[in-house]
Length: 140
Ligand SMILES: [Zn+2]
Ligand SMILES: [Zn+2]
Image 1 (cartoon, rainbow, N blue to C red):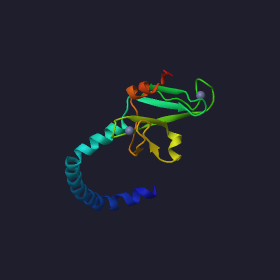
Image 2: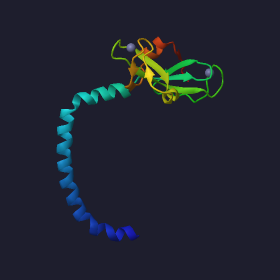
Image 3: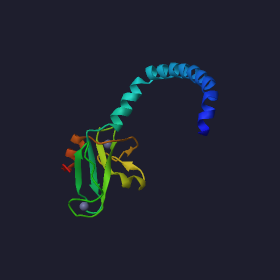
Image 4: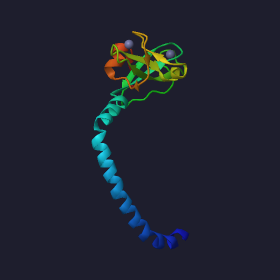
């Protein structure tokens, strides 16, 4: 065991350094957490959802599933491998959420489908957004 020989030598100094460092780090983290508490909530809101949205790029079918259910790429309507995950772009002007297939992201900037404004912030659509979008609920 080559590592067993090194372990007793390196551990004492390593432990002392680590505990001194982690104390300082925890102080900084606590201060940061207190200062950025609001921003953290926004980030959670953007990345947290209660549903998964899917769009078929072959036939245009829209689906949504419960959060714990994930679909393969095969579309249940046209039976082709066309399903992509759906993401949303929120318009601050009219509060409209524009939903897009994730693969379409590379095709230039996303604009609001209601007012045409350029949209930046991506966020996951929720169940109500996907229903309003016209997606069909799939349970498997
Ligand atoms: Zn399809
Ligand atoms: Zn808009």
